[in-house]
Image 1 (cartoon, each protein chain N blue to C red):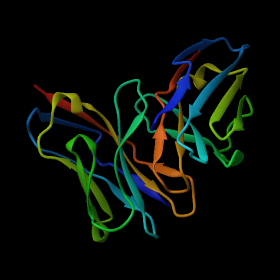
Image 2 (tube, chains in turn red, orange):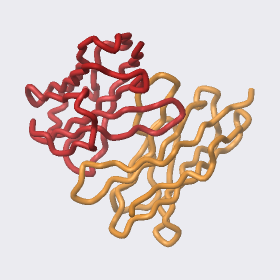
Image 3 (cartoon, rainbow over the protein chains, first blue to last red):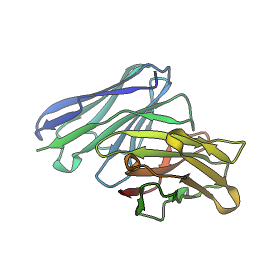
Image 4 (cartoon, each protein chain N blue to C red):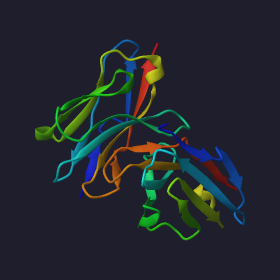
Length: 112
Length: 113
């Protein structure tokens, strides 16, 4: 199983809403990632969890709050987002540093 | 600073023609190199990777890539393109002792029937 599963596939939320994105992998990977991707751009790294601890935060605004409840799950909690936060949010996992990352299909987020 | 350059924003090829997508990187240490493909609205799929050893690596879907240290390049090739290969292609470098991937800006491949 080389799959990273993300839910939901699509999400529309208002600027005052609170929502969460979910990601799951069962490959035994110890690193999990959140990326943000705008149209016609490469993915931008947001957060990395390594062994369930936050390892990298790329200066992401606090309206994005990651959580790693266990080694298979990764959440991204969203609150008070702005329209410019609309993007494709990708989850990924990897076995270790500098090994290949496996990506989920993404959540298309629209903030209205 | 580390960087990845994909010089071609768009490439159009005819179905059945050969393909080469260019990737150049800037990194002082041994690079870990990847090519990913992304169809519209989808996630990224790994095509192939290079860590060490044979500099010509084979990937999925008939793709291959060659690592040339002297040219700091990792170009992606396919001998005969299929219409289903139309997508965005990203080259990426993994940094030593880091979880970060540095992505190129991507090359959009269009396939003419």
